[in-house]
Image 1 (cartoon, rainbow, N blue to C red):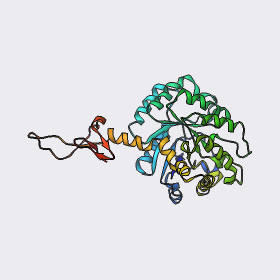
Image 2: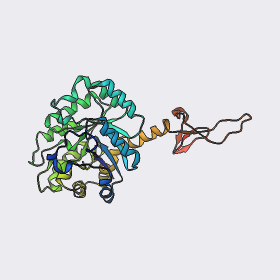
Image 3: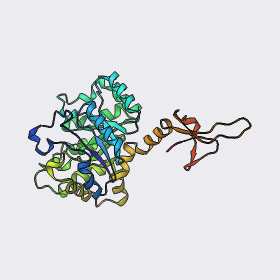
Image 4: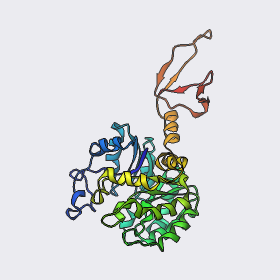
Length: 331
């Protein structure tokens, strides 16, 4: 299983303006080692780390974690979308690693609810789309959710991922306008959604039964192939421990067919974040190659390592078998 929405932060070393003493348990450091044992016990083999601050420091910390831990499938980082030149330069720097899978900003905390549709952001979002990255979006208010269909139509090649089920009012058993807005989002084929953060949206004494109508409505609209599962750890901790919340999320999809469950707990995240394809592209174009060069007389020298990029035109695979006369990246 893949945890498609996990955070890490070390606030004693970096700035996280939204985390204050009144947030209780969250006003602390949360490193990947703090969740490793519980995640492994739950059967989770990989995770997507998602930004928790609109800073490069936060993104670079997540990249450093991914560089040393094999269980990190990717990072959703931050770029200043409202500063296009800088954003595009940052995206080009991020492209040097296959670890960056997408970007996000904490737009739900911005004063302007329509910020994501501002004209000065279009070039940056086009850059995200052109680099085959995703855009995570937190819809904390119905006003945020209402913008998503327009954003999706403006950038039809962009994979747009709604975090936390679009923030339904589970605590008060609210349904509209969330249900209609979610249906409108689901009608756009490039929009995905995360089953995450539900415990935080719930009242005290929540159970997975509280979530079922909301999750069923989402799966009906998006299909399992555009729905993925995330823990939202450690933001979720005030509402319950990791194991309890993850188990409840599995319970709420337990009635679905096995193929649908597999998509939600793994397959959708792999496709939405282009896990395999981005790694393969990076391996073929960045990593050192093994090449042969001919001696005079037609004999060949042994394989040697070079630091040159592997030209994609020289790499041909068929059913995983290297064709004669071609080069292959060193794995």
